[in-house]
Amino acid sequence: MTSTMSRAGLYVLSGCSQPLILTLLKDAGLADPTCQLYMFFYSLGPATIIFPLLLEKAKWPSTRMILKAAGICLFDIVATVMNYTGASLAGPTIFSIVYSSVTIWTACFSQIMLGRVMNARQWMAVAVVFGGLVLTAVDSQQLGEKVTHGLFLILAGSAMHAMTYIMSEGIMTVTKEVISARQNNAIQSGVAAATLLLWQLFYTLPRWNERIWVPMQAAGTTMSYGLGILMLFSLSNLVHSSTFFHTLRYFPGGSTSAGVMKGLQAVLVFVATHFVYCGRTGGEEMCFTQAKLLSLVTVAGGVMGYGLATPREYEGATSTAGYEPVDNVAALEIT
Image (cartoon, rainbow, N blue to C red; front, side, top):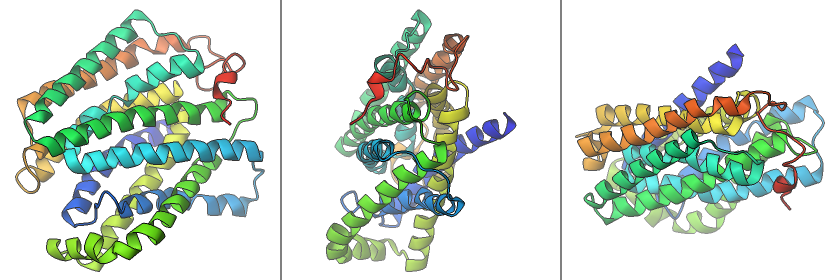
């Protein structure tokens, strides 16, 4: 249990680092939303997990299970691109507030796909979180069209990302044939890296000069510094991805607990962004305001309230993540 708690802590901290690193990439001219160079490095880190797995000569699941994991990955690529493109437009503070709504989206989707019934306190928490998101949306409109566009990208991406929480947990815990956390991570990361590599070869390379090199020169970014930030982003996601799948598989509450941790992540990113970036880069979106504080307290409070209301749902559960494995298999039969 100590190891699981430690990995959950690393999951939160590595998640906090990602929007902060993305701001560095944006300032360095490396966050072009069409090239998605940074997203290739983002997926490359966890993709390396496949090499020790191959050396171990472990038994791999059936082709059907591998295709299920690959399908979840392709869905998540769209969600992740939307989230980080939105973060580059709206800034890390708004990103952290809106992205913490993953908890609530996870709760709603778990009813549909995993057969979970939410109690009245949980529904109240859902209402509080969406109230906080409305406050964030209203405040972001005063910061310009670009920030508002980024906010709605993050909102849609968060909902889609929550769906991958449910599907990933499902194929590791409640389907007739299950896949290990490391294998799931390796397959999904490998598919993502391969897909984004093709995008780099066929889209980014022909446009390298105007999309990447010229913005880098305008920002005064050297090749070594740019590569260093990209590798840091890659390493951060290696830690985040590994601990994410472990948390889904072994932490009590599975996908819901992973979502609740987003509330803590939002608070940490909010504070760190103000002290690290406010007045140094970007505009008002990087700084502490009373409106943002109110939004953060509302969303994080709803997330934590949901977490406090949830543990009773797991009493007497028989599966490792708190779900009955037989009745919910059909909902996770992804073809």
